[in-house]
Each structure stands twice: as structure tokens, then as C-alpha cells.
Image 1 (cartoon, rainbow, N blue to C red):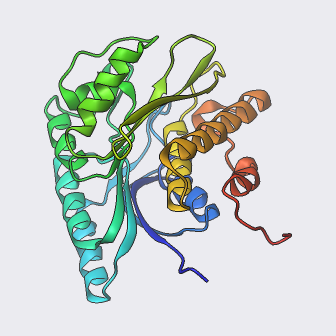
Image 2: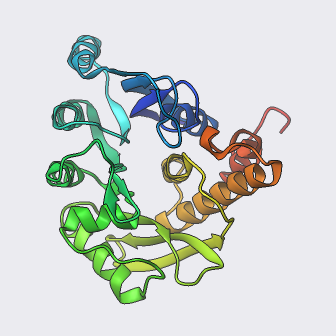
Length: 287
């Protein structure tokens, strides 16, 4: 039997509001991947739509945890980073990648820092420069269109997006280091939304779209990136993995929309996990 793959997920932990580690851990585990975590912060809730939330920065704990891991000789088949709140965390995560990536390991960076043409309020204008250096170490980056524009120092454009604009972002990011690029939040006409995919190994770019469900649902970027990565680590090529991720995410959003759930709490991904597992061709207990 093939040895189980082992991934390190480096994200914050929101106690309420499904995103970051509370999404990455169950989705990747459902994909059959041993998932170890490095929490970068603990929050009482996710930040979108909530006020008065608590926040505990865990930057000082990262080197201590790493030192213990070093003593027991840990290595990972993949490293997956999400929201990183400061230059200090960027530097700490860069060191983790250098030290703990195994041979032929996949490094995925989701450069969570902006949306809708704006940086998140917690970031200084120079933060994208630091994030770009981390992305240069990645094999795969998964930015939204706003983040891609910031990483490249280019003006952000509102959708709908033309193929030439998307191709410029995809090739521009790939030229900075990552072999694979997936742009999220891509749409060419109102009824559909999904991602644009570029695989440097084949030099091919494609669109992978699903039906749009109206509304703003928090944590969907983490849902998509985790499902995408789970498929990649199960041997699927990038384009097929993106299709699996888009379909899974669309189902989560639609399920949440139809139930009328408060979108600040995240999407109902849990009910979609059995179908996700089947899409990966993994056996379940009932065969």
C-alpha cells in the first residue's frame, strides 16, 4: 500500500466562521492526506462581517514549534500557506518551507491579502512585495484577481475579464517562480464564475467555470484551495483538480444559500465531503 502523504497547513484558526484551518484540516483529511497544522493566530470569529472579535498572534510560537519538529526529523510532502498577517510571519513561513519541505514536495501559497481591488485594512502598502517573495518559493499559487494584480504591481481591473488580461496575470505570476497558477474569482459573463488555470509544465491556460450563486460567502477561497490541493496530491492533473475544486465549492455555496444560513459563518462544506471523496476515486467504509 502506498504511504500516506503528509501536508503542513499554515493558517490562522478562527473558532467560529468556517475558514482557514477549520476548512483546510477536514477537507484535506477527507482527501486521505495526513494534515499537520501550524496555527499563526487564534481568533474568536473570522473577521468578515464581525466586530469585537479577539485575536491572539502566535508568531512567537512558530520557531519554538519548528525547533521541536526539527528534533524529531519531520518532513512534509506538501506545505500549504494561507493568511499571514505580518512581515514577521512571512519570514517565519519562508524558513519553514526551506527547512521542512521534503524532496519533490509541493509548496502551495494562497496569498490572502486583498479583494475587490483593495488590500485588507490590516496590511501596509508594501506588504505585497513581501508576499511576492514568498510566492517565488511556491510551486503553486492561488490568488484572486486583486491579489494577482498587487503581486505584479499592476492596476486592478473590474470584471468581466478578457482572456488577454487573464493570460497576462497568469504568465506574469508564473514568470516570478511558480510552475502552476490558479486565479480565483474569475468571470467572463455574469452567470458563471470560477478560476483561470495555467500549467507551466504544459504551457497551457484554461478557464474552469461553474454557475454563479449570488451573495458573498466567507471562506470559499479556503474551501476551493483546499479541495484543489487535495486533488493534486491524489495525482490529478491541474486542470482536472481545478474542476473538482470549482464543483465542490459551487455545491457548498449553493447548499448554504438554499438553507438561508448566515454567510458570515462560512459555507456548508461538510455535507459535500462524501461527493468530494468519490470525485477523488477514494474508497469509503461502505465500499
